[in-house]
Image (cartoon, rainbow, N blue to C red):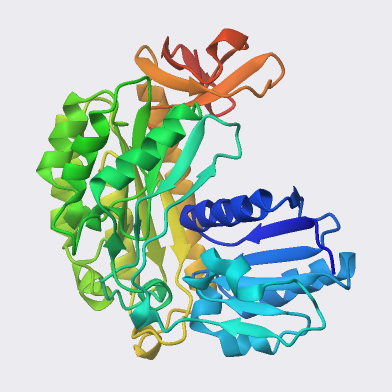
Length: 429
């Protein structure tokens, strides 16, 4: 079967999107045309996630959707769900190949030809043998201004709610000079903001005698007009060195996305997190004291087993008091193979949803409060090319959405603008 069109569907995190983009390049290099997943393709690649609830159902629906468009299409399922539970995917009718997290980057060597008549191909290396590091990048959907750049993979943490270490293997990365070499390629392609991503980015350098701070120093030696943003960093890995560097170097975005998960130290212990609520509080206050106009996003989980009304209120009050700019709220869902699934004190689903809703409302209030504080201040914004009824939009260094009158000369340029107000939930310059 001669195949010349391929379509991709990605579930989950920015890291998955970066990896899908890299797999897409493998197809493009071999003359494939990349088409929208809603269109007809000869090959469909589904890059799965294990964090999403009902991964099996979601995967089955996506496979069906592809086969409705082209019943003869070759279907490849890869990613974290494929790594963890290939036997479940094998039961999904129409799937031709199941590739683990290592194998997806050697897809062409493994499959050879995309022939639906060939026997099903299942290749998943045991997670404990996942040792290779593969670079990956993807671009922001909002135009070619920002690139997500994978610098780390895997995780050595043992959080009781998380399956990612089982799907991704141990923490691994590669030498700083290799990272800098790939980073410069992105700058040569005219990306002005590079977002450093991974499973546990702050753990970069483990096992190769380096650390994340040293990598940042090496990257910042590169000349040019660009900005570095850290996608997410564990609170215990956000060191004073990184904070001080951010406060003094304009090329580092004054924005951190930090997982809290719970404001109750008792629950943090049950989750096997590596800090207390008090440590977290001190960290956020320190960031605000040391870094001008710092933007801080927080991950939080509601409905973890044993989370009482008092625990939730403790979390809510902590987040309400702290000077943060937005929340990412996750509703706890049971994951096979985790310690948390066996814990007592399951929170009713309706109550989980109620708590989620309360925190989402708080998040929106925090965001608007933060945006209001920016009025009268000067922010550095990277503008995108899309025209929104005579306006252009972009992200500031501290992760504030800003709009300004359309000016073609500002596209993909880091531009200092003064914030004059808020309109439709966006800062106006």
